[in-house]
Amino acid sequence: MAAIKDPQEENVSLRQTVAQWLEERIGASHFIKENLDEPMPVGVGWLYTLGSCLLTVLIVQMITGIILALYYAPTPDHAYDSVYYITQHVLLGGIVRGIHHYGASVIIIIMGLHVLRSFYTGAYKKPRELTWMIGVLIMAVIFGFAFTGYLLPWDMKAYWATVVGTHIAGTMPFIGKYLERALDGGRSVGALTLTRFYAIHVLVLPALLIALTAAHLYMVRHHHIAGPPTVREGQRKPFYPDQVAKDAIVALLVIGILLGFAAFVKVKLDAVADPANATFRPTPEWYYMSLYQFLKYLPSGYEIIGTLIVPGVIGLALFLLPWLDRGPSRMPKDRKAVLGIGTAIVIAVGVLTYLGMTSISPAAQHGVTLANASPLAQKGEQLYNQSGCSSCHMINGQGATVGPDLSNEGKKGRSLQWQIQHLMNPPSVSPGSIMPSFQKLGPDNIKALATFVNSLGVKGGAAPPAAAPTAPPAAPTPAPAIKPATTSAKPTPSSITPSAKKAPSASTTAPGKPKAKSVAKSIASIGNVQAGAKVFAESGCSSCHMIDGKGGTFGPNLTKEGTHGRSMSWQIAHLMDPQSKSPGSIMPSFKKLGSKKIHDLATFLNSLGSK
Image (cartoon, rainbow, N blue to C red; front, side, top):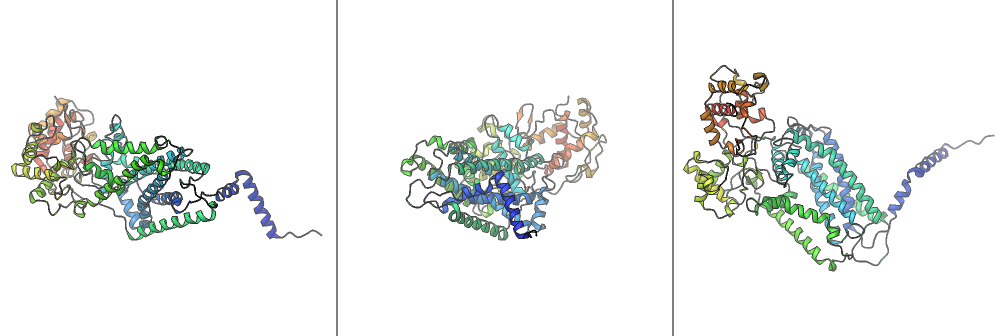
């Protein structure tokens, strides 16, 4: 009689067969047992949990990033709205976004501590040189995540911080302008910038991070944990369970802190990005604050020292540290010079970060003049914003780099009379300057603006210029619809107002490239070319645009603007609302000029290059 098989025994036998089959092919249990049983150097404790904690938070960032990507739309029209929708309407969306936001700061903190622990214990010494170098590359990738992810909410702070960041990249010798153009995807931060940053953030950098992390972990397992530099006596314990327990406790504690911040300290979302509002003053995140503060101490024209040279030298020194400190000993007494230099850099970064964060008052962050600034300086700040000076000059990291950085202008010892003369006739005190004259402001306003400029960087002076997040300060009400004096192009009032979305394009008003003579004839009856040239000069347009080799290069070259076949209605709409015709443009609106001057200016622009 055949024996009856026990079903439970059959299940056990099946599991054993499958387990044995997998083990023979991948050796998982052997790999796990080998690593869990690895003896730890005596003295390994809580400080050696930083690596596994960093890996844990990176995994959390990837998970939350994937969730956010399911709802995010990487276009200027929808990015801000999708982030708002995630925060306000998706179940636990605010928590997920909060974890991802604060996780970036937590990663940089843990990464910094991990690097410092490895540095002070000499863990980069032979044979762990490659382990250290791969770790430095991982650090660079993490900062890349922070930079590219910052733009994605598409609010005012994100937009203008990215404008500053890409301009800094543009200061690199030889390749700077190409690098800036590659990042921007055009002449300024816009739709292509957002698309590229999103692609880099979710495709390129994660692939690099996974590859480098795998290589780093392999090297750590291959050479084992370095342990303390001093040899200690005692019984070596396996990695499991003591060290595993420590790693788990620290990781859970950090995740708990992340959850607490995400739940109770909501991530703010500023007003939607407005590329036309060049007066908004962004402030960097705390991990870039040391460079932000360092730039304040550099004289005008030497900003590249803080944006490229110093960070580049420190980064290269970190990467090559195993070859800069080639002595075999890991003992602190044998590494005094290296430890001294490293400690000085750490202290300097800490002090600069503290000074940078404490120097930004709540009033300055919201664009309010400091209470102890003189009334004349406060008036000058308003004129600075209204005159579009930030389209050429930078103050405390906000603005453009066409002209000198004014962050510490008040410390240069220039008299008030010098500043007034410079504003009235720049070449008279700065030969070769392309800055336009501001005589049109009048003596009283020029004195106020000079007073404000001379207060910058001086304790108790005016706050850095800024504006409300939604519009340039003191902007007048929208100009009435402009009615051309001729019927050669018949735009309706709605087609030329700033909010118009159906303004006639160049293709509809001028099917082919018009002859220069016909352009000149058509525009002559619409506006006054000479009056438009005067408006161009008085409005400081040459600080950004070049005509016949004279002027700035911040904006497009206008030498042959009249040969592009753009209609008058296009030019008028572009002057009143640049974003309506050139999405991503940071050119401010010129509505304040009024109907007549906008007409003349548009006529002048369409005459350029025509004969």
